[in-house]
Amino acid sequence: MAVVCEIRDLERLARRRVPKMFFDYANSGAWTESTYRANSEDFARIKLRQRVAVDMSDRSLETTLVGQRVSMPVVLAPVGLTGMQYPDGEIAAARAAAAAGVPYTLSTMSICSIETVAAATTTPFWFQLYVMRDRDFVGSLIDRAKAAGCSALVLTLDLQILGQRHNDIRNGLSTPPKFTPKHLWQMATRPGWCLRMLRTRNRTFGNIVGHAKGVDDLSSLSSWTSQQFDPRLSWKDIEWVKQRWGGPLILKGILDVEDARRALDTGADAISVSNHGGRQLDGAPSSISVLPEIVDAVGDRIEIHMDGGVRSGQDVLKALCLGAKGVHIGRAYIYGLAAMGGPGVSLALDIIRKELDITMALCGERRVADLSRTNLYHEGRQD
Ligand SMILES: Cc1cc2nc3c(=O)[nH]c(=O)nc-3n(C[C@H](O)[C@H](O)[C@H](O)COP(=O)(O)O)c2cc1C
Ligand SMILES: CCCCC(=O)C(=O)O
Image (cartoon, rainbow, N blue to C red):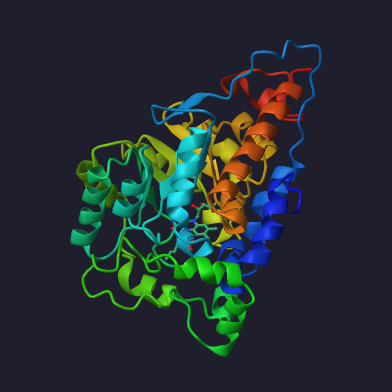
């Protein structure tokens, strides 16, 4: 059994255990992947300020996110097709998040439906919404999330048009998978995945198939997206979503100061600074590099979350120092899930919690709320 110390170990295991088309779907970015790479690389450039002889006993990572108590400021981000990385993956991830005391966000494009995940869990989860042309269907998704007891709505604004992902095109990614010799080979070389997949009935987009009108072929994600997602989505639609939902609302995909200012007018509870994990506008800056200017512009008026490139508890701490209140992780937990199901998600969260706690202590801090730019080596140095 391989020793797992860090998220990269889970990534290596995931690569070995999941058919290539699904591993690549998770592990890739759009076009040249420059933004995807920058998300992680820019974290690595930030230096921490070591402090010594500070009482580091009695530490706590607890805080609140959109008014909800969490054991650490980490959220499992919405990830489409999670149930293709591991059968019933959405249920496994939701349970692992609940056990760890952090929120889980179910994607509109999940395999297990809102109702299936709600029936298999006891802790409320968050729901991520995509806006389709069919507003009756979008409204029904909001109503279903409410009926299932979801405790926050994450409205994604950066994917009305799908960014081009070369690996998915080359791999002929589809759900369910096609049965061409190439795809059969990819699956045959991952027999554990195949056997487990045969045991579940959740193999298609549970929130959509059987619910949305005229939806029968989701096999090509890109053509389906361009037919169904509404490219006219604008700020005024957010008011409608907010009214219909009536609970905590987080706007995801803000990367620009002007958009952050505009987001204030919507009355949303939080914004998430994100470039969709480098999967949409390649060439956009990393999330961590734009976080400080967005915090400076609107941080005193709205709760700020971020995601993109977080692969360790140290990355979480750096984002907190730069003003994020909540840090969402995507691939970091998906690698764990793909590698070993629910226990892999728990392991990913344990790794991140431990790294965050140790790093905070070595920076001489005992509370996440006390972290600030002064804990970073260059920014905000007093001396
Ligand atoms: C495989 C995959 C699928 C995703 N699907 C969704 C989705 O359905 N909805 C959404 O808002 N974001 C989606 N995202 C973006 C994530 O929510 C998040 O912004 C991103 O993963 C953060 O970057 P990280 O993976 O480097 O942590 C997806 C990301 C990945 C990797
Ligand atoms: C049509 C969108 C699929 C999920 C998603 O958001 C992603 O792959 O990044």
